[in-house]
Amino acid sequence: MQPLRGTRDILPDDIILWQHIYNKAKEILDLSNYSEIRTPILESTSLFNRSIGNETDIVNKEMYTFFDQGKREITLRPEGTASIVRSFVSNRLYQENKTNRLWYLGPMFRYERPQQGRQRQFHQLGIECIGSINPMADTEVIRLATQLLQELQCPNYKIEINSIGNLQERNLYKESLIKYLISYKEDLDTDSQKRLKTNPLRILDSKNKKTQEILKQAPSLNRYLGSESRTHFDSVCQYLNELNIEYYINDKLVRGLDYYNYTAFEIKVDKLGSQDTICGGGRYDCLIEQLGGPYTPAVGWAIGIERLLSIIKNNLNVKTKNPIIYIATQGIEAQRKIWNIIRTLEKCKINFELDLYNNNLQKKIKRAYKSNASICLILGDDEIDKKEITLKYLNTNIQKRIFTTELSKELKTILRTN
Ligand code: ATP
Ligand code: MG
Image: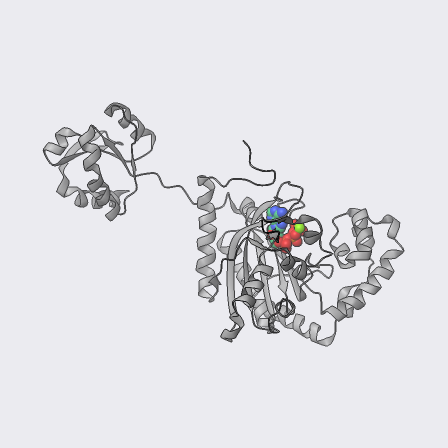
């Protein structure tokens, strides 16, 4: 039996890294008043058609869509923002009349060609700052991304930022981009040729070398920005300067989802080959209204956890906990009496492992050595008769008996030396 192509198990040794990321995110985001939110993995397909956009790669070819038994068209969420906005609208969070700061971590699903850094089930950690048009909001979310990457010891990341203006400005730009590209149509890669009709801005994002070469002389989006877009972008840049956050303006940066306006940004690392983007985000001022809520501007980002992990894995120093005490019972009576002792270990918050094999004590002690525990706690008939416990210190092989009533005190000493 194998997992489905593009999916993978996260085994216990890796889970501690995931927990580390979760804990760091929670710690940092709590401080800035972001609250965690968990939305369903299943959503109605129309949510993504209406938000991400019909001509995007995600909606066109990457969605896991099916009919359920009630003939409803359902999709496994391919990203987080659409669901959060849906939740914001259906729970009327806008009635709270405050800035809603939310974060999430969970699995996303896209039917893509699996390769290094690209899976069909992957995970995103994302934040959304909902309810402000102030460029400080853009700055806040970008700053939090860098804060988190730093805390997680992510080396050499690079922020690229752009303004993609508003819809009107983009439409004007689209026209001139098409005009320019149409004369090179035959030289563009086939995907880009198709996009000339469907989603020309996405051509800017093409990874094809020849297309990229052609794009070098293409008209630049920022010449089409009006004064509001420009002022907003300038403010974001200014604040980032103020914060000493290094960034690069990339006037070819557009995002693969239709709902963005004004600020768009990505964070890249240099180690991952062509899957080098670990974080993508931007402003989406019209999405909430588009999905039936009141006009509410918002900005956010998502980090791909698997890509991030592949970068930071070796820098992180998080270890699995070995049991400190390995418990070996001998005989039926001990199997009954051990539970009180286990309760005492729990109260003292000491890690332990209970041996569940049904064979002789020598074999149990062998397994105690193998488990890397410091001590083997032995309970047999003789110990029970005398209300005692045997502790075998596995480093020194010294063995001693203590009264059961002395266990708590002994455990405190053990915890101090471990
Ligand atoms: P790409 O251009 O690499 O396909 P994207 O623009 O589709 O990325 P977003 O939708 O912005 O990605 O998602 C944000 C982040 O989620 C990405 O930067 C990446 O780290 C991660 N991500 C996206 N798709 C995948 C995938 N199929 N497998 C693993 N991680 C992914
Ligand atoms: Mg993609």
